[in-house]
Length: 294
Image 1 (cartoon, one colour):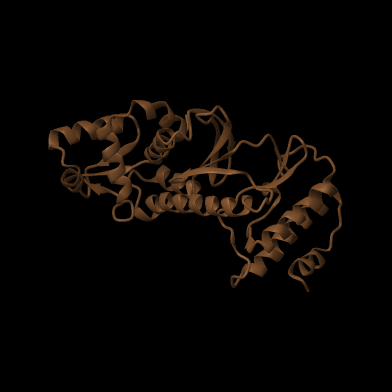
Image 2: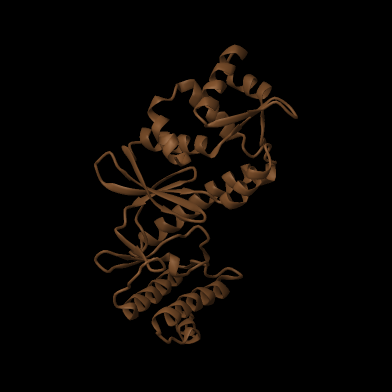
């Protein structure tokens, strides 16, 4: 069971004081990898006996872990962060029910869900650094600060950046997923029915897909942004044949120092893929020059 599924099972049964403890741990992620028990005791205002009862419950629910050395402390697990995000999204009437896993990537897990109005949505849980963390966690009982907490913070930042980019682009009628909400490291967006080009066994009318993809890149550039990490894994074709570009956490301003360099690389990556897989020859430098007005 994934950490998000674990969190979803427990989100409606959480005690208010358990949530207070989790929020305090999250609030001080930048300050502590292992949160001193004495500091949590002071900040929470709970009695020692009661706080130990709460932390024992949270350990049992696999939302935190505790250590005795080098000092007695507590650390938030990604499942705890998942629960806080789901609790906020549920309390804010954004999400009413949590569904199945529909995608797993290097940096994110995707689940489907329903809004309070019954609309189907996708929930993207960022997992920046997951591979590095698992490797360290497999080798050591104590995970050092540089291997875990900063990755949680980077996941939160990645979700924030993607949501801002999606909101900006969608407002200009550019073909990206409709953003609905963000909480911590989770982005809620419209549910897309279709396939990612890189995973699709068959792509109908690849020439049109390429043309539309390059058109979206141009629209994004005119809006002042560059995806900066575009590949066939970012090209989504819906069931009715519409092309949408997904994954925008690394988007940068087109006028930034490396903006044009990244634009050229995005165009090259896409053109090279379509040539390699479908035999469609495209002069990517010509496409680039036309986009920037040369």
